Length: 255
Image 1 (cartoon, rainbow, N blue to C red):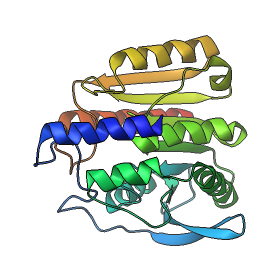
Image 2: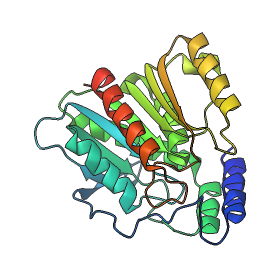
Image 3: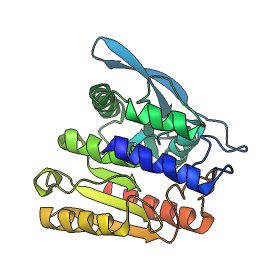
Image 4: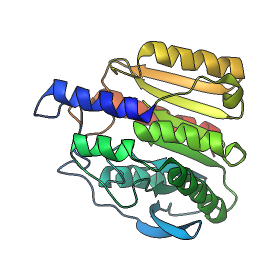
């Protein structure tokens, strides 16, 4: 599934031309400097670096943050900082073992060659780190694009530890029995997304309803990647509304 998605995203990059209207570089020119720190996660006999953004006071919740196909970039770190500003302990894990890129072809290759077992182990280690450091606060997951799919999968792989799942235009799954383990889902979608199309979103909505999972879906008249300011698909009104929606959902379901 990830291979198909990578191929489609790459084809969209070609369609949109040299300006890269669809696919953003990983860091906007004026991207804020990350405010957090890096930590080592123990993953089996190895370690994986992750970015930590801490709230000023006691955490009102904790979030595992999953990156786009570009890798663990400054934009993802900035979003973690934004979550910390809302009172959450945020941990952005690295699924590419230190690699990141602004080139769509390389991003597609990184996504296609991603070690799934390693990624699952990193996500599990991230959730364990959050549980150990969040002072008893609830834990959730959030991600964009590839990270949206990973947000869902991390929750499905470790449902006992996850209270909230936030998916920004990530590939869903439609298996009702698996979805029954989820607790609360927020889906942010792009109506002009060429692969995660409105019909797929509708099928996911139906599957979650059949599974009895509490969920909210919000769709915008924008393209895939609209929440990232460095994207040619960036839509400021949609991005701002989606972020306010995300904050409200987290406040209601994670705190």
